[in-house]
Image 1 (cartoon, rainbow, N blue to C red):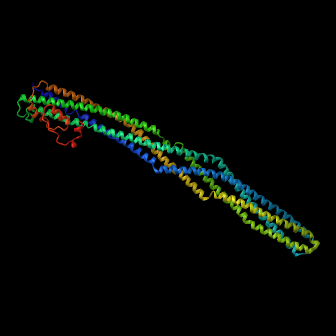
Image 2: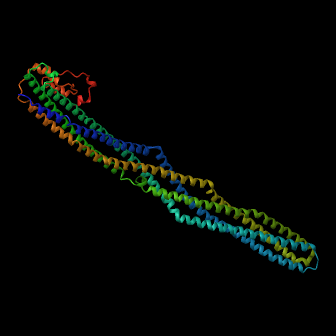
Image 3: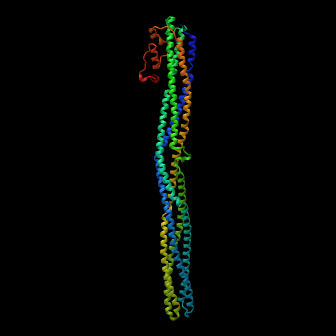
Length: 573
């Protein structure tokens, strides 16, 4: 039987370009798998960063500082209540100071009347005594000075009472408006921090799970990329068959190629048929391998798509869908910390107002205490003036009896004035003691503490917000980047349709080659052994090709490279 060279050439011409479109598709799939792996790796990196942030010292420190600030707010609420109570005590003690000043004022009024009586009694004396005139002058002077001093006391006391009334009302209003919140917000912050701590642990564990799942997907993608090497193997095998068909054609058309050198036409035709049968087997095997591996890759891509979808679903189930500005992490704590910062700011303003008012009230009371020495000196001068007048009235006898009665009354008033000054001094000391307590509870130290508390609240909120934003960004990346992977994998699977089509086509071409070689006479085994492999100008690179050639009786040398250095195609295909 004579082989049909036109049919053989047509088949060779169909085979030569057949793999190019599939090769392009497989290369594209490989590139896109690399991009998908990069997306998955990027998701893993973000969740790794998130895990380090959630487990890090900075966030732990922020939680500790916020807990301390929360406890500080509880103490602040207690101090504000104590301040209102102390202001009430101070009001009572200032009332006692006012009562003593009023007592001194009544004594001064009585002294004014006594001064008038003294002038009337002196006018009835016949004696023209300079001592009596001096007594009248001293008495009037001392009475006027005492009245002026007590009026000044009254003015200072009134100013202190006014300032106290204003600040007490302001502090009471603050407590009514903010007192409950100062107690409730810290409790909510504590509960929120406990929830954050639990969420941090859960989120860290979830980040590890997401990372592990991403690593598994990336590893599986790497396996698929390796499996895509079936494309390289198939291309090489088709090139070998195409080259062999060219050699067969050349020999049949009379070219002096090695495989048919020195052979008779009958021998050459029989050996060519045997070579075509071997090429048919090589084509069918290459097509079957391509089909099997393409179906395996397609199934792997489908599984990877499902894994990617499961990873996104798992992440969203563990973290929620996220929220703006980290609120999925902070939850209600965001508002509580903001309210806490506002409360601390208002408390600072209230404390500064209390400090200013207490400084003014304390100044008024210290001025009062400083004036006690003046009125004590007047009381002594009144006693001395009265005693001198007694002696002068004694020298006048019955004529000085009326004036003598005035001097006795003057000494009694002087004693009452001394008692009044002592009482005022005691009342002032009690009021100053309460004032000192209030002032110790404020001052620059407390203002600085509140400023530090506000800074802590702001810093803690910012750090927790950073963690929340990082978590939301990771979830958003998981949703957006991870969500694209299943669709891309599905599109890659569609690209493998051409490879599956080519696998079937190669089987068909193998059948055509086999039909061309059918009915050819037997070839001497020695000729097959020595010449069959000569149709392959390019040596085989895969063990599977060598196995098929041996099955056709060809003399196939062993692979030159040791097993450890074999190409991946040699042991995969």
